[in-house]
Length: 365
Image (tube, rainbow, N blue to C red; front, side, top):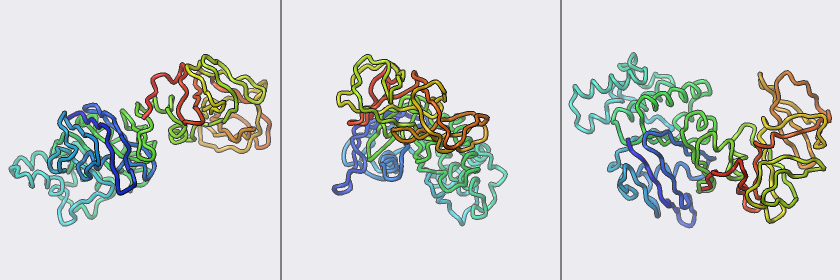
């Protein structure tokens, strides 16, 4: 396998810039997700890495070689599409072995590697079946097998689970990660589903409007979002964002909102425009009758072991994740406190995180 390094990558379609000056490194053997909504540039980035699109400018290094302007056939990669693209007139065995047949590999070697790959994917019992009659999960395994059997430098996957139902998708997420761990492959995986990315990836690059907004581990992105966009995109429910019209000096350890003093991580810089945004994950919001920061319960969403309580405050609505046993009802007045060491602060003008004791080390794209 190999490291993939992207430097200053850009793609234009006429006057439209689909990918803007993107740079990131995918370590050898890692599972790397490009995450973002439709139209953010993630699939275009993947297709440039694969050689299916040529960049307008920039470099793509695969195993130390710049392959940015080489054809897809000249790059040692395997691509798995959202649509399985299997050959319906071939059975499972022939579908998996077809790439080796095209390379002129001996029949005995093809047979051995097909059986090895099928066993790895747990589909060795259906090798002689037609692909047209297979369930979605098995068809996806066949498509993966056709990519794996070549033993390429990298695997590129474009929303390969998008057509599966929820139960199959959850199962295949586990299977893909276990498969990655067994074969130690460098994998680049495109998805718009944050749960897929958070559960499988070693590293995530979050894209927005063609640019990488943040690059990091799933936990660092969740705990320390680098921008307001990332804070809103990652998390279910999303991070609460409270707009505050007040000065924020360097070294501040608390702020005042509606007459209540809220503890925050110590700031390393000031918000010069007098307008910043306080971010709090729902699990970092607590009810406290003694708190001066108050709101009215708007409604609850029962989730089994927990419930999401929506509270209306002067600045809008915020959500708190509470135990399912907590008793609250719509219209009730409640006091709110926050876990100060877990809060995020953002500059409203730029949308970037304000450096604090918590956020030092966050990566901006």
